Length: 316
Ligand code: FAD
Image: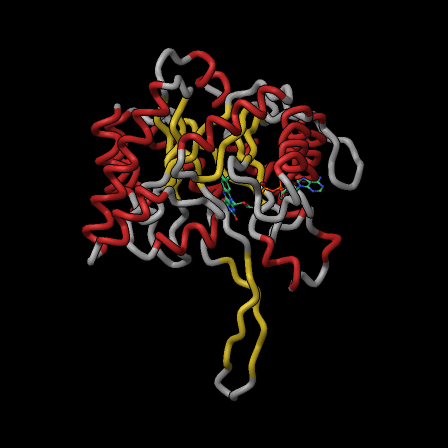
């Protein structure tokens, strides 16, 4: 079933999570281990993140240096299909613009269609690739442009404008939003304007960047509703696992750590102690979100599968 149908038909707050493809050269077993651990909470869909290729410099045996393009975590398409086949759970691969060309996207869409994976999360991806891309024309700049490509694909229009047999079971998809504003957006108004564009052009739901202060999420949802965005806005949740995340998460994700949480984390002498604080905060956050009637909680599990398990055990 499609994610949007799962959400709209559900009478209870759903549990979903995202997993990362294993690092190149590693087994898919790690993915299965994470899913096996979290299956107890009846995940209705599982997202698979996507990671851009990047240039690295390799020293060759003769001492010369070669610039090579590598993808450290390949395999989102195959993993999505493997998850659906193994578990019968809807898989949602992320599609990104950065380091992932329009042409590669088209081939990925064809593969996904053949594999029966029809749900996507459309994103721009990390901006780092902008400075190093050799051929900027080959890539989309914004998630909304990627969305246009997917919409065209659904109508049977290829990248080069040629027609192919229209996708009989077109892709449906969600897109990202930011309760604390995307770092590059000049202001919240502009960020919400583009979120509204995403929905107007076909995003069935939005998933938020991680946040630790529910009030920010509630205020954001109110503002979106006032602007006419009526689709589900799924909270993205991450339990803090390491003491260093006190400063790392605000820096990388622009997610503010509320002072009561920061205070507890500052007291932690070890990561084990920080993990306990993170789990406790996350439990309270989730209970409060559920009490406010959110349709679903979407967990970021990177290095946090065990914490997510412990939170879910109490919340679901
Ligand atoms: P966009 O929607 O393109 O927005 C980027 C910025 O441009 C915003 O400031 C926005 O206001 C503005 N903007 C949007 N559209 C336009 C337009 N048409 N013209 C001008 N300005 C515009 N990254 C990964 O690399 N892989 C992943 O798997 C991944 N998964 C994620 C999952 C979730 C739920 C979230 C919230 C983020 C994820 N990210 C992932 C990170 C994401 O790619 C970054 O946050 C990225 O910087 C922005 O992505 P976006 O899709 O919101 O971009």
